[in-house]
Image 1 (tube, rainbow, N blue to C red):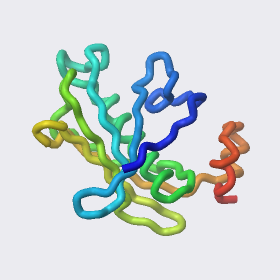
Image 2 (image 1 turned 90 degrees about the vertical axis):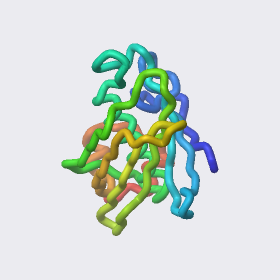
Image 3 (image 1 turned 120 degrees about the vertical axis):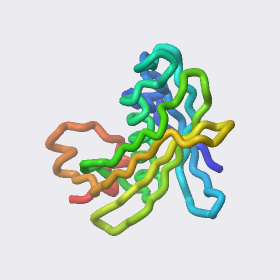
Length: 162
């Protein structure tokens, strides 16, 4: 298991270490029980992250899985990818406030032009499924990144597609 480094200056709401109101998700690379590489994060919903009383907001649940999906793409391929829709989000039960959860992401299909990732969430103690996200990705384009004036760090710009 290896913890993944996220730059302190990351402005991301989901994973930015210093975002004032963000989720501050941290990730690790690990092997699943079957030996397949995956990216994981643990999270415990806070009382101010609710939709219904005592239940994690479903949009934030989707955000956690989307973040795991992105970090899975970046970490397991070493390249920057862009999610293309639509994604398939399933909520078996929404995570409960104050209960620890684990989200896991795996690549389920990969070609040079396409990546498919599946993320699942479950309670840590009981292992009850909370939901899943299946997303599709395409390589990030240097032209699009430059046109949008996105200030990516150089180490991420190195492998962008033209």
